[in-house]
Amino acid sequence: MLDQIEKDFIKEVIKLVDKYSFEKCAYCDPGTLVSIDGMMDFKCISCGRSMTESDYLGEIIKLVYDFIQKTNYDTFK
Image (cartoon, rainbow, N blue to C red):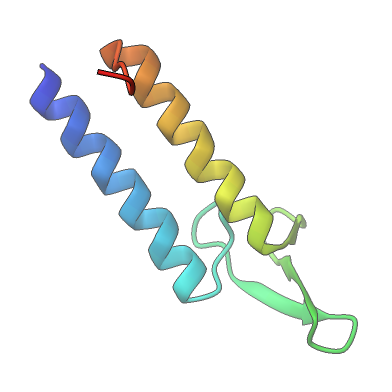
């Protein structure tokens, strides 16, 4: 069971990193972003959310927290 949870966790983190690398929306698929406000800000054409670097980090933090909850992982062992 733990092996599958770990595999799913890694898969989701890689998916978010790829979305960041290819400038895709962190929240939806396909999540194509268009630039707004002079190429400095991006907005998803699917869900309409603005996208910043902190959005990707926030989604990764959610995955880590979920992983800790599912596995009772103790980071201080």
